[in-house]
Every structure is written in structure tokens, then in C-alpha cells.
Amino acid sequence: MTSVAAIVASDAIPKKLYQPMLAICEVAAQLSRTIARGELSGSLGHEVGSNTDGDNQKALDVIADEAFADGLRGTGVRWYASEEREEVVEIDADGGIGVAIDPLDGSSNIDVNVSIGTIFSFVEALEDPDDTFLRSGTHQIGGGYVIYGPQTALVVSFGDSVQHYILDPDTGAFVLINPSVEIPETSIEFAINASNYRHWSKPIRTYIDDCLAGEAGPRGKNFNMRWVASLVAETHRILMRGGIFLYPSDERQGYENGRLRLLYECAPIALLVEQAGGRATDGSARILDRAPDSLHVRVPFVFGTPAKVERVAVYHDLPTQENSAFRGSNESPQIKS
Image (cartoon, rainbow, N blue to C red; front, side, top):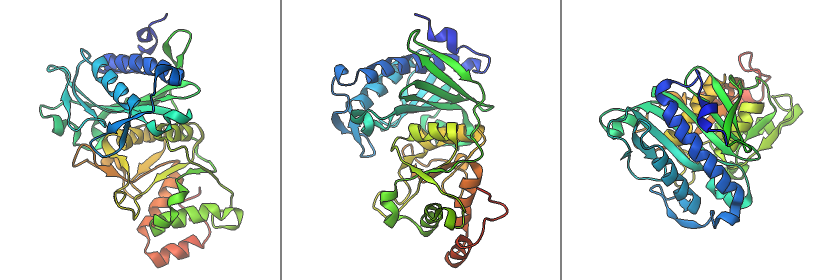
């Protein structure tokens, strides 16, 4: 079997991140096989408790977290911050890298055979573990995700492009298939959980209403809605086909500041999206400019094709009465999507 290292090794991967990347790829390849076996590997979707933020943990959440922590030992990673752990843990005392990771994003979909994934990012390690991660997303030196679906794919950026790899099941190696992914400029797709419409703010409702109005509305076109309830799956579709993803804050208890974690989910996805030519905000402000005030802080998240994300920001910036007037007008000259 070909070594993952022989394929992943590339001038596009910074030397200091090569070993951590190799470890992530090797653990991901093992998880891919476990996930593909489904119930043959045991009750992977069985609830085994809850994490520090109150979300239910599946058996595979815990398996994945322990596998990545163990796999990263000896790779130059000092600090390991996981969505599944309350605090940062030290991996290698002399390491110079911090890794923030959501070991298994979308684990609620395990039992229904829907794509799930792993999201990760790299920063330079500081002496204090919390200080290492409680900085804005602009401090990331790399980030990406692995998606476990019909193909197992790795999508990663180190700040100058977005690379797309696919795991070859015959060799066990991740093979580079696109060294520079770019989000398409136009798309008729949007992704949001429409069942929460009654809880949304006026700007979000207005944006979705305009999409649903179709050719007769101010957008002048028909749209398709998508919702997988798996962040990596939504991200992968947008990187490949364009469109917009919205997970806003709303009026429900516990959702006032959104639901996705800034450190483990939004910041690394925002890095990829921007490097692929898209935009990522909290509805108004750039996600990568936000610094978490705690390891597990949540934020609203909107990302995708630039013109669509910009339009959402315009709706947030306008007073309610002007928002309604803008909604009924033709396309803004600055916003053509």
C-alpha cells in the first residue's frame, strides 16, 4: 500500500506543517474505513454523553478525538484544542504548533449515512495554551477539512490557495486533484434551516423571502434550497458549485449568538472560503477578524459567493423601513447576485 506521506508531500505544504498534516491524513484514512463499515464497526452513532457545551456526543466523536490526539504526538504540535474537550491539552512540550479541531463534524448524521467530516486549523503555539487560540482567525497558518462521503476528500489551505485531495481507496493515499479551488461566481443555491424562519431576525427573513420570491421578486431568478445539516458537506458543495450558507443567530434560548463554534468550525472554514475567492461573515462583519473570548464561543455564520454574502450584510446594515424598501427595489448596482 502506498504511503500517504509519498502523496501528500508537496511544495504547497509548509515544512513545519508537513508532519501534522501527515498525521491528520493518516487518522482520517483510518476513520474513513471505520465510517464506511458503519454498523459493522459497532454502534458508532450511539450517544455516550455530552461535550462541555452540552451537545450530545456519539461514540465516534470520542473515537475520533482520541485518534487525532494520539496521532499528532511527535509531530511538533504543542497544544491541542478540541471541541470535545473542556480545556487545551499539551501534546509535545517542545512543539511549536497549536491545533484546533472538530474531530467529527455532523455526527448526528452518522446513522443516516450522510456525509460527515473533520475540521482543523493550525496556529503558531504561544507559551500560554489559551492565548494560543484566543486570537482572531487571521493568525491561522493553515486550516481545512476532511469530508467522509461518496469520496473521502481533503480540502486545505495554507494561506495562498485551496488544495483539493481525494483519498484513493486502492492505495490509501490522498491524491491532489486541484491545487487551486475557486468558488464559482454565480449560483442559484442557498442553504439554511428554513424550519427556524419564525425565529430569525428581519434581515435574514428578508433575504430568504427575496430568494423564495423567484423570478417575480427583486432577485429576478428562481433559487434552490439545500440543507444537509453537516457543515463540511455544505462547505464542500459551495466550494464546488457556489451559493451561500446561512446559520444565523435567532430568538431561541441558546441560539442568541448563533450555534457554530468560532474556533473549531467558523474560522477554518472562513479561511478556506476566502482563499477560494468567497466571503465569510457573522452576517455583517468578517469572521476572520473576530477573536474568541473563550474556547467554545459560538457565532452566527454566513459564507459563500461574495455578492450573496455582501447582500446579507446590506440587509443587516439598513434600518427596518429602508430594508423593506430595498427589498422591493431592483438589484443594487453593487450587488448583482
